[in-house]
Amino acid sequence: MKRHDYATRADLAQALAAGVAAVLAGGIATRGEAILAVSGGSTPKLFLQTLAQAEIDWSRVIVCLVDERWVPDTSPRSNAAFLRENFLRGRAAAARLELFHEDGLTAEEAEPELTRRFGGLPRPFDAVILGMGGDGHTASFFPGGDNLARALDLASHEAVVSMRAPGAEEPRVTLTLPRLADARFLALHIEGEDKRRTLETAMGPGPTEELPVRAVLRLDRAEPLQVFWAP
Ligand SMILES: O=C1O[C@H](COP(=O)(O)O)[C@@H](O)[C@H](O)[C@H]1O
Image (cartoon, rainbow, N blue to C red):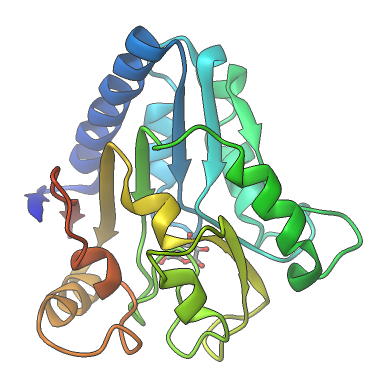
């Protein structure tokens, strides 16, 4: 893992956005397109607003979320709504959005269609930016999640699984770890002292099921996981 610590959240957002924009520009230059997976929640707001202004050919970029809360798009809990609000208002509005929602289905019922749809996206992803909750979840890999083992199985061919967990307010869907683990640029973006402490605990020994972010920290990758932190 490589740590990047910043004095302020604004400095972090600038640096991470510049790094991701460069990776996407590289993908566009070499393969004609690039694919980016981002997190929801609240932490990525400034990073996404900054990245949305990057001067790259966004019409050649596919953007998706790493996970979604199974709520209507109109809900303030919707990660898709967060993305529309904070990312798709700048130059990035030209990107192709691939969202999880399937009307009228439960998260479990939507799994096969979502796996078909997300399984068809180009691989590996150019950039994946993960977040982390205070309970050590990342994407929707939650402690006690009903499908946590399926989601973390690196040998699995599933692209998307549903997740219900005691610590999650609503049912979820999440990209599986194998879909994220081989990203050309894989980053974990966290802010605040509490999350720094959780990260440091997760870096120590202990079961993945307790702090699922460990599954990401323990990946065996040629390009190290990039950890971005600011107070
Ligand atoms: O529920 C979620 O939480 C995590 C962390 O969110 P934050 O608000 O603490 O930044 C996020 O990474 C994930 O995408 C989201 O669905």
